[in-house]
Image (cartoon, rainbow, N blue to C red; front, side, top):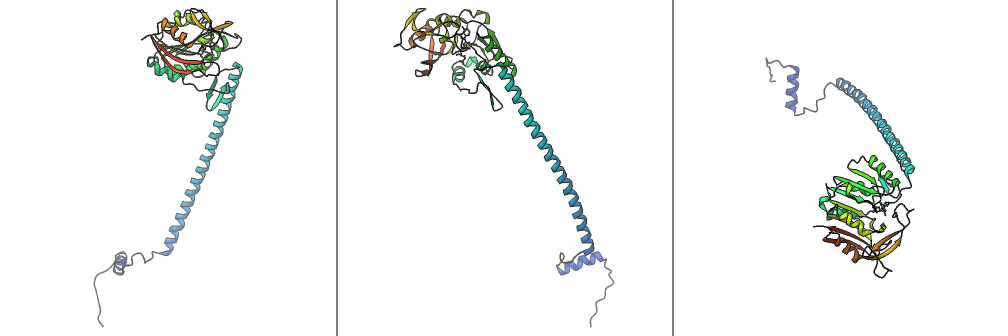
Length: 304
Ligand SMILES: C[S@@+](CC[C@H](N)C(=O)[O-])C[C@H]1O[C@@H](n2cnc3c(N)ncnc32)[C@H](O)[C@@H]1O
């Protein structure tokens, strides 16, 4: 029987390697089973320790998040309470203010195209000086101030100006000033000149609109006007050389004029008044003959 002898010595490792190669079964030869079991047990133990640690950390983070959430809800509740109280103490409001999804002041707040129309008609008003006569509680004044460099609000009623000042402070607006004044008499010259005037809801509360339009024309080349006008079929009278309707005012109403009557020129007379006051370019931006408070018009009048 043939014998194979060799003087070559094999290390166990090399031999194992060789045999594995030779047999092509490298994965089939199990390592020492006891050591494998020990290794697996150790691994499991470590993994369990790690996952326990991780689970603990996750639980801690979850409870931190819950605490933060309830602190936030509490803060929101407190903020809402403080705001509600601050608004209620200064009420009754005409303006509604939305803060953080809640409405304060008056419950409803209507949207209006007037700001958009104003800045479109007078681009110079953006970053310019703007006057708002009849500024009420300052809601529009503060909106104007987001784009204008400076805004001056003029208003007759002290309580309305106090509310406006409250809103100004609440929102930290610094480019707005409010003055209490009677616009039937104020000649407007003490406020300087303006790039544009935003005159909404005021003219039809004045007894002498011609006088007021002329005073506005003296301090600004641009006038945005949102006002009521008289229909020609109404019972008309003449005032300041204009045809119009004499309307009774209720000075007790915080949104009305200060005198017993106001004068509404007809639309044609309104255009004549503007052009005679120096506004050579007049554009009708919106004509609202069926407005629920009476026929209304939005006009951009300019000296250019
Ligand atoms: C109908 S509200 C219009 C408010 C705001 N401009 C708007 O369009 O929403 C009229 C405002 O003009 C003010 N006003 C009326 N006559 C005034 C006068 N003679 N002098 C100053 N303000 C006056 C009222 O107090 C009121 O705030």
